[in-house]
Image 1 (cartoon, rainbow over the protein chains, first blue to last red):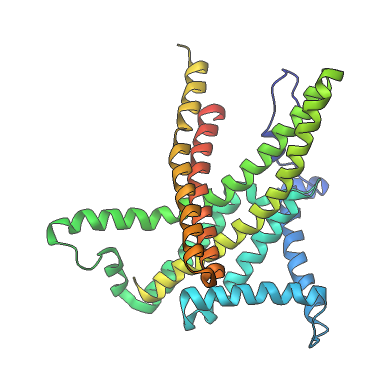
Image 2 (cartoon, chains in turn yellow, blue; image 1 turned 180 degrees about the vertical axis):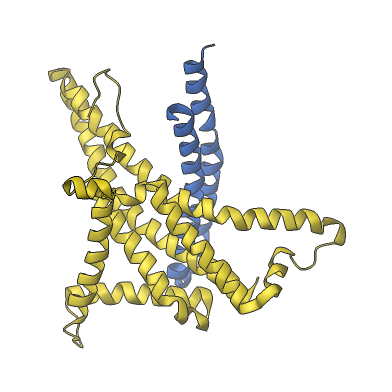
Length: 251
Length: 74
C-alpha cells in the first residue's frame, strides 16, 4: 500500500520473489512461473473434464470448453481461410494461456505473468518467428516480395520497402507492448485506487465518503479488468491469425 | 529547472497522445452506431470489428502510458 514516504508505491506489486526454497532460487522459480503452471493446468483440466461427458446437450463446463473451441476455430477459418485449420492448435494454445493468465491476475494473491514485458515479448517473438517461418516455407524467396507493395511507382520503391520492413519488424513490439501495457496499467490503476482508500481512511470521518467512492471505483475497475483480460487475449489471437493470413497469402 | 521537475513535465506532455486516442475512439464507436443504425442485421459482425479497433486504439494510449512510466521511473 502507501509507502513510507507518503507516496503511492504502484509498481512493487510486480516484483518477483522465488519459491520452493534454495532449489527454486537456484533455477529462479518465481511466483510468475507458478501462475504460468496454474494457467496451463487450468486449461488442461477445463478441456479434459469439460469434454469428458460428450453430452448431446452440454453442461456448463462442456459449454465453456465448446465456446472457446468454436470461437477460436471460427476466428482461424474466417481470418486465415481454409488453411487456418492447420494453425488452430497454436492459436488455441496462445489464446487459452494468455486468457487464463490474465484472468488469474484479477484474483487476489495471484500473480499476473502477462504484466511482465519479458513474458509477452517471448510470446510475441515466438509468433513473429512462426509467421516468418511459415511464410518462407510456403513461398520460398518469393516471400520477400511481401515488402514491395504492388502498384507503387519505381521512384518510391526504396522508401516503401524501408517502411514495410520497419512495420513488419515493429509487430513484435506492438504485439508484446499492447498486452503488457494493458495488464500493467490495469493493475497499477487498481493499486492507486486501493492506496486512495487507505490514505483517505486515515484522515478520519471526513475521509470516509471519498474512501467509499474509491472503493466503488475499484470495484468497477475489477469488472473492467475482467473485460480487458478477455479482450486482450482475443486481440492477441486475432492478430496472430491476421499475421498468419499475411504469411499464407502474401497481401 | 531541475531534472525531477523536467521528468514530471515530460510525463505530463507525453499524455498529449491521448487527444488522438480520444478522436480515434470517438470515430470507431460513432461509425459503429451509424452502421448498426443503417443495417441492424450486421450488428454481430460489425461489433467484433469495432472491438478489435477499440483494442488497437487503446494500445496507442498505453504506449504513451508506458513512455510516461519510462520517463518517471527508469
